[in-house]
Image (cartoon, rainbow, N blue to C red; front, side, top):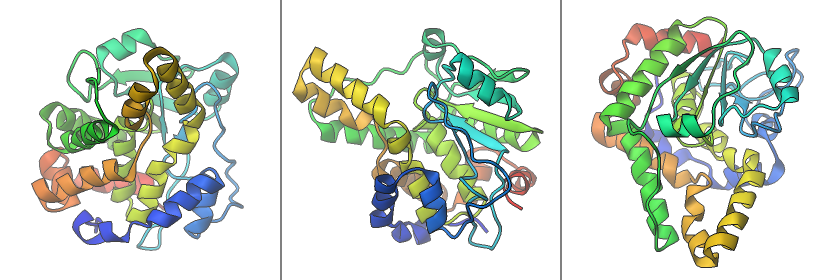
Length: 291
């Protein structure tokens, strides 16, 4: 049975999430969750040109679930925009990705086109339902945090968001071979998808939160570079006010989970009523996710 945010959200281990970020990447997180790093399957490669690329199933032998199962690795990947260098493209080609799902707006795609893995098909699913994503100006960091929380709630309640996410999960359930989904930074729109997949797999919610926060580690050089550019071009005050747009925070994902509870009562109801998924589709996703 799917974990319910109303019950389990108090179990989020705020301290342990910070410890994971301080210690390093997903291997540390997996060790904390009881997984083995001695699996036969090699570690997911790091891609310098697509820094937030990673396996939804985790590292090592995969995340453990609350019902004693384990996430499959090499099935679903998440990423930021596929600005692949030649070297990284060759590395990604070896993973056998057959389908890429681009969650960006048309203007984002026009600015930064994907470099697709060899032989992969591509589909666009405009989660926001707008031509572009442009954040409004903010006077304070608190305003930016509120905006990010509103975005997370809209993933749950917005009509374009629900339609795009429903279509994505249906495609992931029906697909064969490795599949990849991504947004621009791979942390918000793609981060919500990853959190839902881990929820469907029955991964503990504290682990889901820690996995979500790992975007801050993977994107750290990019966040630092964007912050420096903002500070140089707009000044320290504006850079500080816009800082919450560049990373992820526990409160963002929590806002989405809280909205699931407020609008649908349970995660299962959100998946079926909100996203229009059949129980058979949810079961097919779970079967792809765990073993």
